[in-house]
Image 1: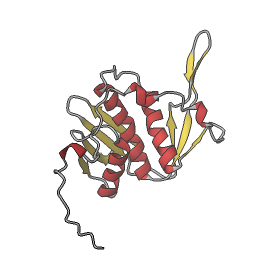
Image 2: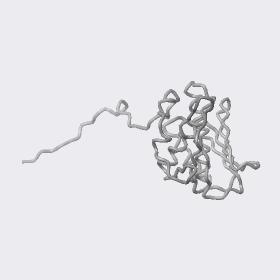
Image 3: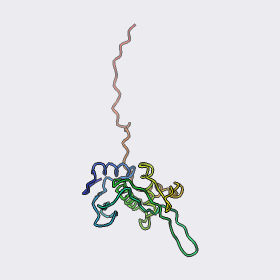
Length: 190
């Protein structure tokens, strides 16, 4: 990963977090830039042709931050579709930047898997949310500040959807290239 950070956040910590949670997918050709936004509280962009992700963070954000997401199931009646807004309680700028990176990274994976990248916002939010809940214990609450059960938002197989995206090579021991065995001299006494 070609990583750059122009914010006050620790670059090594950000890069390590991004690379850790991008596994098992390939990200060696990906360029990632973390910078301050020009007014928005946060934003992100993924440029497929350049394999570049921008993570933009607001300077004035107050933490804990209540991040509205599109992870709830869609509902409908005879004339309208809607989706409840569930909120993640983000503790700091590192978690917010990780969410934005993972959201954009899932867009990148969808394209790399040969799928249509349009209209995948809810899936991207779920991908990022899953990491924050599983690895950083982030809470998800509804409009009444009640905890949201996992089955209300984690209902898609996101990994299978991008299964065709290139995976990073594993670092297992290659037993086919071992040297030929050598004799060890042994003396038997008695």
